Amino acid sequence: METRIPTAIVGVTGYEGVNVARLLAEHPRFQVIEVTARATAGVPLGVALPALAGSSVADLPIRESVADAALVFLAVPHGPAATLAAEYRRAGRRVIDISADFRLSDPALYARWYNHDHPAPELLPGAVYGLSEWHRPAIRQSDLIANPGCFPTAALLALLPAVAAQLVEPDLIVDAKTGVSGAGRSPSRRVHFSETSDSVTAYGVNGHRHLPEIEMELGNMAESGQAPRVTFIPHLVPMNRGILATCYATLRAGITETEVRAAYQERYQGEPFITLLDQPPETGWVRGSNRCLIMLRVDAARQRLIVVSAIDNLMKGGAGQAVQNANLMYDLPETMGLTQAGVWP
Image (cartoon, rainbow, N blue to C red):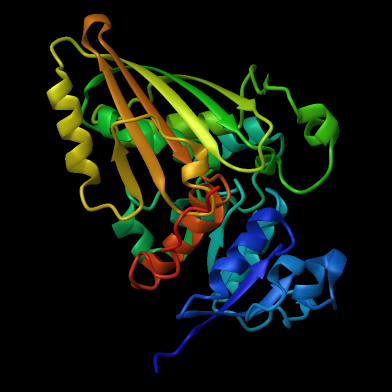
């Protein structure tokens, strides 16, 4: 029997933390030996989170700190995440950070968007942006992964093939809808049931923290190295989970629909978690799965490319992609522990 990898989940009682625990409870190679959450320290995990009762991790006592794990999933807010990541890296542990602390490689850009200095700028050069389908070799070699944000995952998977192949002009629009779980578990007026039910609202219209992340990665993958101009507006819709991103781009002169479809098919051929569709995807089709569904529409008369993508924000946009990256870090089959179909209805 192969040795299992001792693993910890820090911040296990948040939405991302509990989804990592749910996935790893059935994973054949990662063994969760420690979970932390200071507010519920000392309580068995299955008691604090009844959804996990009966699972292989239910009897784990929630701790205040990590002692023995080789791999740590950080599911805590930005700021504290970087401080903990520095502590764990000094101890020789591998880290997958689900917060935003290592997504932006420029500490000045981080300070601008997160309103405080980066707590561990010395770690930024070694952090790898964990968009699994686009950075496999680097992820396999890294000990610190910056798990992408949920909106950037949906937008980048939709747009990167066109940008990398220089099929579109560097002026992009991303219109994205998300469920309320994207705001996290802490209660607030914005996610109060009576505030969100039967209503849709745009937010972050003056600038959302995921915008520089989207622009940075698009620029990194563009042949010119220049970040395109991106207009990104998220919307909160009354559902629990899921992201639907509708992305718009202007085709470069002379680009045909055949070239566009060939670029996407070539780039995503054989990708286990990406499916190209001929119909608009729905968030309900990916609920609970690590899949990303993508539909292309080319309006040749208007030189317009429209790409629609759907993901579960807590899976491909969070915990699922984090486990996918962990599989890559340890040279395991990428789909290990992630073959769940979507939950329907």
